[in-house]
Image (cartoon, rainbow, N blue to C red):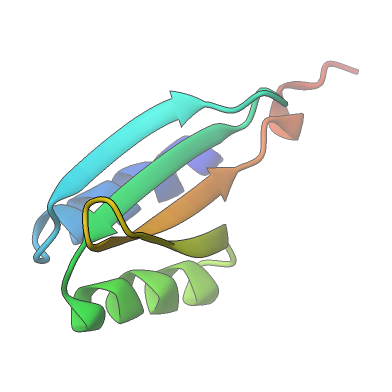
Length: 82
């Protein structure tokens, strides 16, 4: 269940040097968790956590804030009813 993985990632990320944390729903209905940090080590640790937990993620540099954003995507397909 992705909620458990999302909670673990939030708990892990809060202990790191992050400057922002946002959770929202994407246009496809996926839950998206965004971490922002200007510390390269923090970004690397979040990426490694995602890789180990098999969480889809993408990294993007935000020039306006001089931070790197890590977007973690939690698929909504688990809600499909049979």
